[in-house]
Amino acid sequence: MPLLTPLRFSWRRLPAAGVPVKNLGLRTVASGASSPSGASPKAFNIFDRDLKRKQKNWAARQPEPMKFDYLKEEVGSRIADRVYDIARDFRLALDVGCGRGYVAEHLNKETVGKFFQTDIAENALKNALETEIPTVSVLADEEFLPFRENTFDLVVSSLSLHWVNDLPRALEQIHYVLKPDGVFIGAMFGGDTLFELRCSLQLAETEREGGFSPHVSPFTAVNDLGHLLGRAGFNTLTVDTDEIQVNYPGMFELMEDLQGMGESNCAWNRKALLHRDTMLAAAAVYQEMYRNEDGSVPATYQIYYMIGWKYHDSQARPAERGSATVSFGELGKINDLMSQGKKSQ
Picture (cartoon, rainbow, N blue to C red):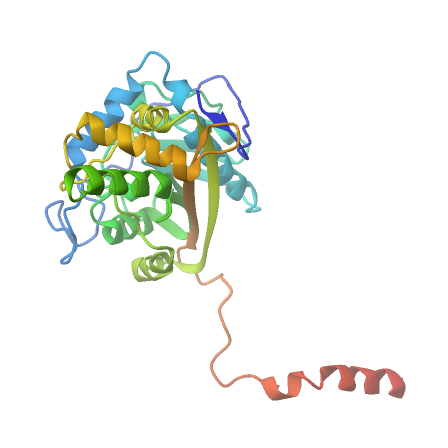
């Protein structure tokens, strides 16, 4: 088991409640204009989505899947905190790429009336964590959401969107299924995630084999997220980053946990196998470069959190350009003006 450092956990096991699927707003394709084959014109086919589904299904079938849930439960609880920060109730919510339901378990039925949970892995849906919120499980791809326009008051996504090939399309679909004035709250891995593992593997493979292949999947840059959210139609955007560091006995224990999370690399250009001596060399490099005083090694997970709203006439809007009555040059005189006003009183 890993040695956890600044993680906080909020374990809750609440009675499960199910609801029938008869009221589902199902549709063939979530995008209003394109078909499943019509991805974005410049979309890249980076990840083997069928392999990712198999990896997640394998992880969900393990005898003790909760042993590897620590990171996803922590991020799920932080997304739930952001939901609670919004002073309103959500009658209908959707979790995109829910896994075993790491967000729903931290929410209550007073905040969310009904939760639709979608994932590409059927075993993850079958083995979902318990929650007091009535839930409906839907087997669906993040890039092809089978719901009608303006269906949900809230959409969340926790550590799933970093595996989609067409992130702009996925965000557009989320925006499409949101009701006006609905909110999207998401989290995905950032570019500095597992930099220790990436560097160790690259150095060892270069030294032993004369070159290296990508063994950690590529991630989105934080400065691109705001642009992608705005392009998808969201406004009143918030994007922030956080880091969670977990300590492990060694590199091999870290890789075992990544496999147990269903987070193994599934990029098409990945190298299927590494030589044994290369792996041993990488573990030694990891220890030498990054080990803690107690002999453990850290693994850094950078998390991007994003919040975006679908437009509604009731939302606050910036004033028209040129409507200001005070210039920035006069702001420096505000203290003088206030003191003069007090003297005149």
